[in-house]
Image (cartoon, rainbow, N blue to C red):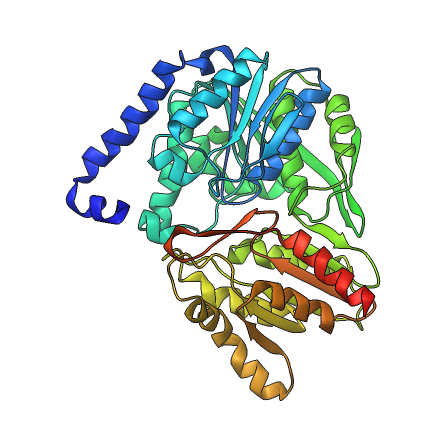
Length: 440
């Protein structure tokens, strides 16, 4: 029905329709964002993690916080899963949530801001105090028409917020986001010497920079230093240093000291569905949300570089790709990345929506078939049923191996044809199938 409407209604009318929904929702609930400090986090990767880390810092500082992320909703101490299969709720839902947060005494709302949400004016009338740019990589290209359009859409968030901007200086798109006017600008980096040589001096005028030094990625966490304060995080992967720096910048911009930031971040043991170790022994099983080429490669690199698996053990990878006509270009790219890092590859179903899931699987697997033939061994498996794919991965694993399951993280649904949603959680499926192995 939606596609039918789009074909016959001019785009400007659809645009005004979305804007009107945003305005009417804010009007009905009395513009609750005016009584809250709203922090918006945008970018391709890391949004959910940054939202969580930021909320922990502000809570450690004594503030009551509300959260909207792809993982959960939270108002003060009450939290519940985001089961919408939508990172940013609709305009009326957001305003209703803001009203509840405001009435409960929250001082801050931290939320993920997606490009789709911006296109549909879900970011309007939120009166942002600060906005954060994490990073940018090709995604949703078919929706936006080009990477440049995708970037411009993200930029609209910075255009409407004139208060505080926080930017990842190590991302190649940093200059674009620094050009927008703001009362206060913050940047974070782990390689400042490179940043200064790449950016014009005027971009550093009035820019407060948080630079992480002595960065170390360990098999059980991360170490880095900001000023004279050493941070010891329990999270895996160098990318989580950037996520932590994003949250630290938000804290500093709100008057929270580094010691408080350190105390908050070091209490965090894991992020749901983000490099989450579900099984420790006799082999490791990790679940991660990675669903873009860049994020998938970083996950595989993290596992290899940290030697979570020894040189003699195997990396067994389960992956798929979203359907529904989205980002078809990335499917063979995901396959090539898996071919580069994985010892065994199982390509499976993810969220096919109305596309043929077998066709999606074949598009991912195509780059892997040549390797399968050359090895003349069981290297590639194509298993439509995701539970069976996970079961197969566990059966292939031996002591010391690592099984990495990507694409869904802690998402509670699998979306299939005709709008049907099947209850799902990769982590729970892993535990269930692992218990069956133990009983054999």
